[in-house]
Length: 244
Image (cartoon, rainbow, N blue to C red):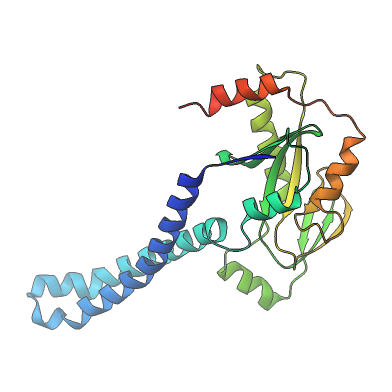
């Protein structure tokens, strides 16, 4: 399998997340230092520092914390999706191509003899129940509060996967009009527990040791003989969207 990863984007976003994390602490510390020094400043400055500055520093620090935590969850948190997806696809045909972080909202795209897949990943490690399109988080009230503070709410993976597939489908419309993009939801953390009653989108684990994993799914879907891209179409796609 050939792997194409947008390494510069991943590196840049990891650095931004790290800088944002430290800046979110420096901003309130700097504000406190200014407050402690206000008695040594002119009176007009005292008014600004004592009354206005606190109302600016705290919201700014809060926004920076949210920003850095969200970026850290996506770009720093382990295990890394691109790594576990690659491991989960070990042994797949060498005609396959995995693209990472190029075609948002399709963060991971697989062209393989089994078909074309838009993968939406989740890093969460909790317990969830899925019935059709409804996702339920199996956590206590305290657990939900902690989840909110960590910014790791599950959201709507089904909708996100379908939007990613739709975006990729539009990109392929002129290159491979007979190919249907298959949406997948992939969980990368082996500690997660998923209880699925029914789902319009396959929900899989990247870890091949877990049941309903990506590797086994690829073996099953092979029997369906889904239409896929030819080598010429893959080259045309890359020329259209990756060249330059």
